Length: 132
Image (tube, rainbow, N blue to C red; front, side, top):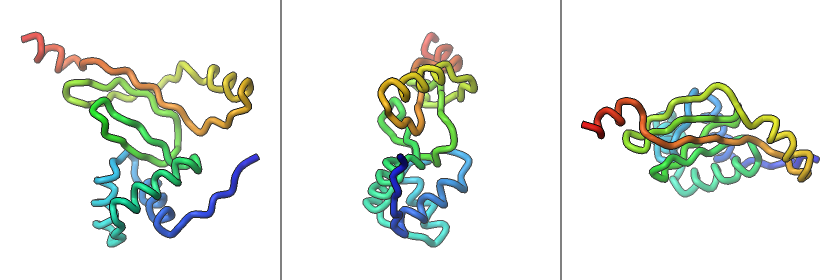
């Protein structure tokens, strides 16, 4: 049974912007992006709207190793290799957990909107830099 969510105008604005972007974005950068589009919202409103959209299952959040959260329209699962030194991320195309996801949904009668898989370490460049 799907829940029906009633979006506020702020949530709708944020959702449209996230859908138009090809990348994840922080709440602070979303604030700047909205301002560029003459759709100014307060940062607290943006955070509340992102939380509501996340509960609705249409926005996903990815928290980086240094604590910053990145938001995107829930288009697909995300998998990354993230460098703890330079914070660059490499997207992993294959998903090793789809079968597990389906089993968990069925076994626990739990609707999964998305998942993230994050591996943390050092990229090749930072390995060479730190070793020298």
